[in-house]
Image (cartoon, rainbow, N blue to C red; front, side, top):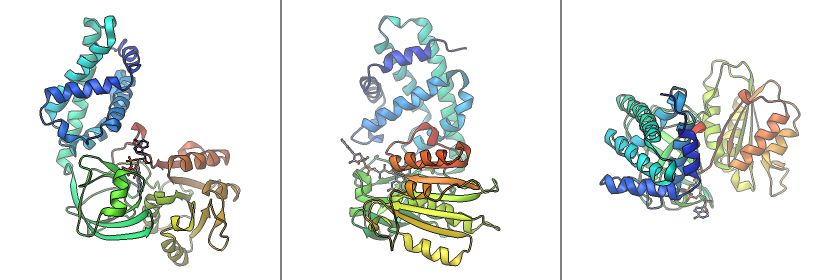
Length: 377
Ligand SMILES: Cc1cc2nc3c(=O)[nH]c(=O)nc-3n(C[C@H](O)[C@H](O)[C@H](O)COP(=O)(O)OP(=O)(O)OC[C@H]3O[C@@H](n4cnc5c(N)ncnc54)[C@H](O)[C@@H]3O)c2cc1C
């Protein structure tokens, strides 16, 4: 079936804004006992994500196979919430009810048929994804905090012992839930390559609910939950180019993991690492870089401070300004991670420097993960 009216209908309904996912979720909670408990008290983010994911799928209605990796990743992340096959079926019914409710007299049998067909195809891919994933890994992991190192007022480095092997690619991140905020999942990047002893390291900057709990409340011995890792900020060692690693604040976490990955290559390329922060305490893990730079002849490191002038410690300016000052980086691939504004300004400077998009990999530390950030490894 070719979906000719779906996209226009979704656009029309979306004009009602937040009322649409509000209606959809209340319909779902009404019809599926126990479903509400899978979500946090505040559903705002969840509603945005639902509309974003549905919109993305509608856009690809005539070629869902193109976004199968994304849909499988979505199903994989639903598993940590306890979503089962039958929930998807009920969800389809609630989507149809919602679209009907907001479509007014545009709604007719033909449109309903399109929605049902589309949702049937969509849930089939999701259910397949969840089943395939269940054959490979648990829905979630638990991890004990074995070391909590408060490096600055608002920054902590946590070492965790995961209960069972936790496979990921260096540079990826995982959803984390703390007991203080049940069902409120936030992504944090593993700052090390996978280890035999199942320990991982997170670098967290206190910014809101979950991060503040991780920095200020969590103690050694506490248990947190983890979901399946995601992310495309992973090393591509086959390009034959050198590597430019750029981090802002705790964006250093995945950059450190990538750098550790490089140390394991038989012939490492030249690597330059730049870490940016506002003030010196934002360079909370720079000592390890100095140690590695002394050990590896192929590595050079630099720091940038934007709000204070400390030439003995770092160049002055934002990390993107400092990189721009170095001239051209023609023989390099770039990996960028940090707050969205820092990533965006750095990417702009890199593009101006001649970088094409296929030479840049990035991760924005936003509260929301966009469809393009999702990835199946
Ligand atoms: C792929 C990925 C990897 C990440 N890795 C890391 C990492 O390694 N380390 C790290 O520190 N972070 C990382 N992040 C960011 C992290 O996931 C969280 O987004 C961040 O910690 C904030 O979450 P929170 O629950 O603490 O804050 P939230 O409570 O979600 O708040 C986020 C921001 O919104 C503001 N806010 C909240 N509610 C309101 C409101 N009602 N009105 C106005 N403003 C409001 C808060 O003040 C805060 O600034 C990553 C993000 C992504 C997407």
